Image (cartoon, rainbow, N blue to C red):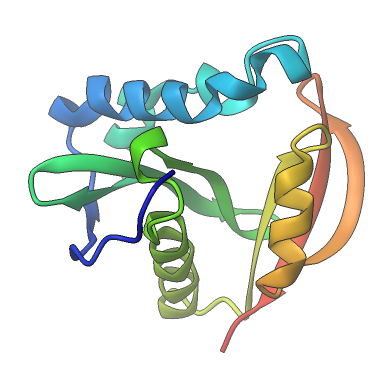
Length: 156
Protein backbone atom coordinates (compact mmCIF):
# COMPACT_ATOMS: atom_id res chain seq x y z
CA UNK A 1 0.00 0.00 0.00
CA UNK A 2 1.29 3.44 -0.89
CA UNK A 3 1.31 6.15 1.70
CA UNK A 4 0.75 9.80 0.82
CA UNK A 5 3.98 11.64 0.20
CA UNK A 6 4.71 15.08 1.50
CA UNK A 7 7.44 15.51 -1.13
CA UNK A 8 6.83 18.27 -3.63
CA UNK A 9 6.02 17.19 -7.16
CA UNK A 10 7.88 19.29 -9.72
CA UNK A 11 6.65 19.25 -13.31
CA UNK A 12 8.84 20.25 -16.23
CA UNK A 13 9.20 19.73 -19.97
CA UNK A 14 10.81 16.42 -20.81
CA UNK A 15 14.21 16.42 -22.50
CA UNK A 16 15.34 13.86 -25.09
CA UNK A 17 17.63 12.39 -22.43
CA UNK A 18 14.47 11.60 -20.42
CA UNK A 19 12.99 9.39 -23.17
CA UNK A 20 14.09 6.02 -21.72
CA UNK A 21 12.79 6.92 -18.24
CA UNK A 22 9.56 8.31 -19.73
CA UNK A 23 8.98 5.11 -21.67
CA UNK A 24 9.79 2.97 -18.63
CA UNK A 25 7.34 4.93 -16.46
CA UNK A 26 4.54 4.69 -19.03
CA UNK A 27 5.14 0.98 -19.62
CA UNK A 28 5.14 0.25 -15.88
CA UNK A 29 1.97 2.30 -15.37
CA UNK A 30 0.04 0.62 -18.20
CA UNK A 31 1.44 -2.92 -17.96
CA UNK A 32 -1.40 -4.09 -15.67
CA UNK A 33 -3.86 -3.43 -18.53
CA UNK A 34 -2.14 -5.67 -21.10
CA UNK A 35 -4.17 -8.75 -20.25
CA UNK A 36 -7.44 -6.88 -19.80
CA UNK A 37 -7.17 -5.11 -23.16
CA UNK A 38 -5.52 -8.02 -24.95
CA UNK A 39 -2.77 -5.87 -26.46
CA UNK A 40 -0.52 -3.00 -25.39
CA UNK A 41 -2.56 0.07 -24.38
CA UNK A 42 -2.11 3.02 -26.74
CA UNK A 43 0.28 4.96 -24.44
CA UNK A 44 2.73 2.06 -24.57
CA UNK A 45 2.96 2.50 -28.36
CA UNK A 46 3.84 6.20 -28.40
CA UNK A 47 7.04 7.51 -29.99
CA UNK A 48 8.37 9.36 -26.95
CA UNK A 49 11.48 10.88 -28.56
CA UNK A 50 9.28 12.43 -31.28
CA UNK A 51 6.71 13.65 -28.75
CA UNK A 52 9.45 15.11 -26.56
CA UNK A 53 10.99 16.82 -29.58
CA UNK A 54 7.54 18.33 -30.33
CA UNK A 55 7.32 19.66 -26.72
CA UNK A 56 4.30 17.51 -25.90
CA UNK A 57 5.73 15.64 -22.91
CA UNK A 58 6.16 16.78 -19.32
CA UNK A 59 7.59 14.81 -16.45
CA UNK A 60 6.79 14.85 -12.76
CA UNK A 61 9.73 14.54 -10.43
CA UNK A 62 10.16 14.14 -6.72
CA UNK A 63 13.70 15.08 -5.99
CA UNK A 64 15.68 13.51 -8.83
CA UNK A 65 13.23 10.64 -9.41
CA UNK A 66 10.91 10.67 -12.42
CA UNK A 67 7.55 9.62 -10.94
CA UNK A 68 5.04 10.55 -13.63
CA UNK A 69 4.51 11.48 -17.27
CA UNK A 70 2.04 13.78 -18.99
CA UNK A 71 1.50 13.94 -22.75
CA UNK A 72 -0.73 16.84 -23.83
CA UNK A 73 -1.26 19.01 -26.88
CA UNK A 74 -3.72 20.96 -28.98
CA UNK A 75 -5.93 19.18 -31.51
CA UNK A 76 -8.83 20.15 -33.76
CA UNK A 77 -11.14 19.15 -30.88
CA UNK A 78 -9.38 21.28 -28.25
CA UNK A 79 -6.69 20.79 -25.63
CA UNK A 80 -6.04 17.07 -25.25
CA UNK A 81 -4.54 15.05 -22.43
CA UNK A 82 -3.15 12.06 -24.31
CA UNK A 83 -1.46 10.24 -21.44
CA UNK A 84 -1.20 10.49 -17.68
CA UNK A 85 1.11 7.87 -16.21
CA UNK A 86 2.28 7.47 -12.64
CA UNK A 87 5.00 5.04 -11.66
CA UNK A 88 3.56 2.11 -9.69
CA UNK A 89 5.47 3.05 -6.52
CA UNK A 90 3.85 6.49 -6.53
CA UNK A 91 0.20 5.68 -7.17
CA UNK A 92 -2.10 7.25 -4.63
CA UNK A 93 0.43 9.91 -3.61
CA UNK A 94 -0.99 12.87 -5.55
CA UNK A 95 1.25 12.68 -8.62
CA UNK A 96 -1.64 11.97 -11.01
CA UNK A 97 -3.71 14.76 -9.53
CA UNK A 98 -0.76 17.17 -9.84
CA UNK A 99 -0.34 16.22 -13.52
CA UNK A 100 -4.05 16.71 -14.25
CA UNK A 101 -4.09 20.07 -12.47
CA UNK A 102 -1.00 21.10 -14.43
CA UNK A 103 -2.72 20.10 -17.69
CA UNK A 104 -5.81 22.12 -16.80
CA UNK A 105 -3.70 25.17 -15.96
CA UNK A 106 -1.75 24.81 -19.21
CA UNK A 107 -4.97 24.58 -21.22
CA UNK A 108 -6.30 27.72 -19.51
CA UNK A 109 -2.99 29.51 -20.09
CA UNK A 110 -3.33 28.75 -23.78
CA UNK A 111 -6.86 30.17 -23.84
CA UNK A 112 -8.94 26.98 -23.82
CA UNK A 113 -12.20 26.85 -21.89
CA UNK A 114 -12.22 23.08 -21.58
CA UNK A 115 -9.89 20.12 -21.70
CA UNK A 116 -10.55 16.61 -22.95
CA UNK A 117 -9.14 13.12 -22.67
CA UNK A 118 -10.09 9.55 -23.35
CA UNK A 119 -9.59 6.20 -21.74
CA UNK A 120 -9.87 2.66 -22.96
CA UNK A 121 -13.33 1.24 -22.32
CA UNK A 122 -11.71 -1.62 -20.40
CA UNK A 123 -9.95 0.75 -17.99
CA UNK A 124 -13.00 0.86 -15.76
CA UNK A 125 -11.18 2.53 -12.87
CA UNK A 126 -10.76 5.65 -14.99
CA UNK A 127 -14.46 5.67 -15.83
CA UNK A 128 -15.13 5.99 -12.11
CA UNK A 129 -12.35 8.52 -11.44
CA UNK A 130 -12.89 11.07 -14.21
CA UNK A 131 -16.51 11.95 -13.38
CA UNK A 132 -15.51 12.36 -9.71
CA UNK A 133 -13.03 15.08 -10.67
CA UNK A 134 -15.31 17.02 -12.99
CA UNK A 135 -15.00 15.29 -16.35
CA UNK A 136 -18.20 14.57 -18.28
CA UNK A 137 -18.47 11.67 -20.72
CA UNK A 138 -19.41 12.92 -24.18
CA UNK A 139 -18.57 10.13 -26.62
CA UNK A 140 -17.65 6.48 -27.06
CA UNK A 141 -16.01 5.38 -30.27
CA UNK A 142 -13.43 3.11 -31.80
CA UNK A 143 -10.25 4.98 -32.61
CA UNK A 144 -6.86 3.67 -33.72
CA UNK A 145 -7.97 0.10 -32.96
CA UNK A 146 -9.12 0.86 -29.40
CA UNK A 147 -12.59 1.26 -27.89
CA UNK A 148 -12.40 4.64 -26.20
CA UNK A 149 -14.52 6.68 -23.80
CA UNK A 150 -14.13 10.45 -24.18
CA UNK A 151 -14.46 13.00 -21.38
CA UNK A 152 -14.40 16.78 -21.31
CA UNK A 153 -14.01 19.16 -18.37
CA UNK A 154 -14.75 22.87 -18.37
CA UNK A 155 -11.93 24.95 -16.95
CA UNK A 156 -11.82 28.51 -15.66
